[in-house]
Length: 259
Image 1 (spheres, one colour):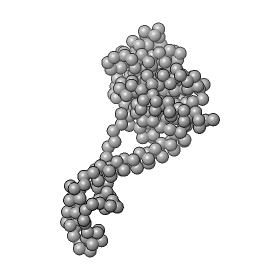
Image 2: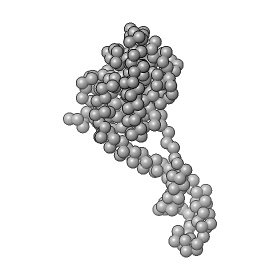
Image 3: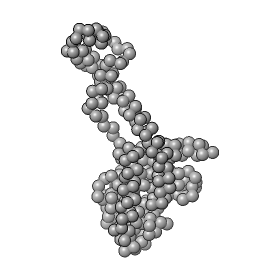
Image 4: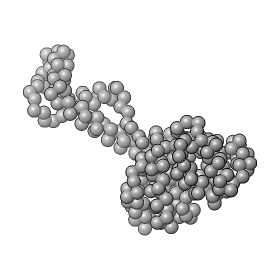
């Protein structure tokens, strides 16, 4: 999942803002104007230090507020990217599809086959697909967890090229397998489904699949995504494995807005 990182300068700014902009605090302190008139930087530092010692929750509250504000700003940027790149995101010809290829409810999933949270979300996604015959899931390979993930992503896209009808089964078997998903495991799963590995090889060695993965990585970068899974609809972005009920609620909202 995602874990927020706070830049040291932002931490400093948050502490200062929380200290001087908090409207009501149960402490006695001189006004900033008085301290400024006294010209005593040391007095200001002492007030701040004592205040934070007595009320350390100020730092927590300031950081939480800062994270909320930053995430809101990121979401505004993401909405803009989704609007500007809607065709490439939702109608990517190189991306495999789960569910109904002609479905009117479209959800994009950025994933990595070695991501534990993606594996957790997989059962929820497939349950939604089974329950809704109007749902189209666009699968975007975003292999962030190393060479093994990159190889698995390439095999998945090669399977999509060679035997698109077998991709859903291939996709599910990768997620339900144990241990790291690497090149050998991905090819073995494809072979178990009756796909000739020799037919996959030209695609694995060709430039098209590498370019498709690179485009996914570029989209993720522009969307400021730093982990998987991420689900995107025309009016929402869902970061992390939020569970079946949460995803179902988002789809219901999407369906209502489409009416």
